[in-house]
Image (cartoon, helix red, strand yellow):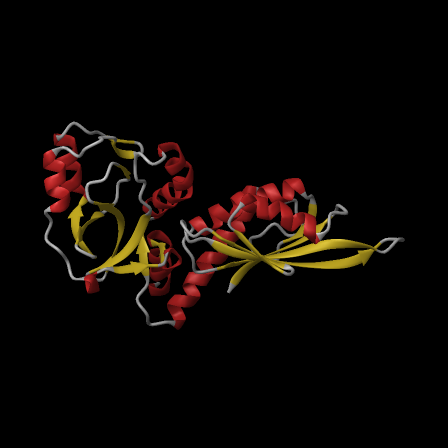
Length: 285
């Protein structure tokens, strides 16, 4: 099940010019007449399939495209897709056709209209999965998903700003004792910008092996605050050259966990809790 949006471009721009525009934005893999968007940090992906049609007196080729975004995905899939689709349509005006029940029809395109149709279809997709599959549904609150997505989306820019002086971790999703949690990896007490997460995955080197352990965010925040660091909008800015002794002792002296306990989840598997609970409640009525 997927969200589908058809684009019929007005301009004489061909597929090559359009795909060149997409390629310059980054995160696109081009193959023939298909472009696959995949952000390896946020986990968001969707496809564009191009075709051409001869029109007019001089039978010029006119480009078309079909955008396909899978349903049963976290809501930030729609948010990131919109960031890509809107500038594409601003650069290459087109007639749209949105066949979704709550969609935009034959236009005009708008951010609000796209997200309305995507969210409605995604909710329908989640309902279908709940009725067809007995597999456990993994979820987190929408606010937590969106915060993690925004952090990951901005990570390349934040890391470029920090340069080699500080490490900026990606926010990951892990399954711990049957529940989903947000995780940030912090190794060897390195200078870092630590985002607020459920657990910090501590790491140290023992010979040729990496050893891992967990610390709750409350533990980490208490330690860092006691050593003069504040939890700001971007988390803790650990800008030291050498880690203060209490921080180094904490970050390197943890009890190891078995690697089998580290179950990393793909971001596309973690749905919005509110959406899932709404569909479960509707099925009970």
